[in-house]
Image (cartoon, rainbow, N blue to C red; front, side, top):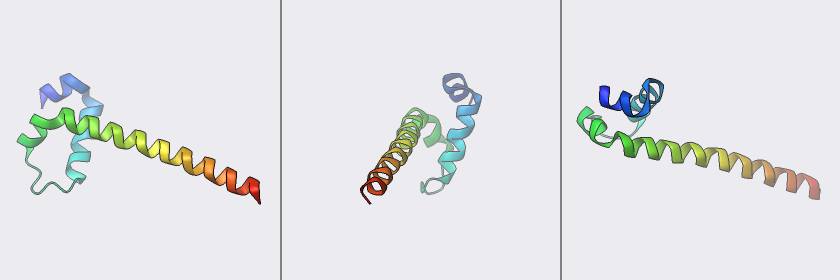
Length: 69
């Protein structure tokens, strides 16, 4: 676990491990997490960015629709 903390920092490591245990991975083996935390980190980052982009697009669409009425 220290390698994960050294790589991404304590707070991000904590976020990643919490996220990992919320995924549908059966059994949540820690060895899988240790060997793939960098991929999990990238995936979580991509999901977070996607959420922000989707919210922005929803707001833009809402403004466009409301402006047309």
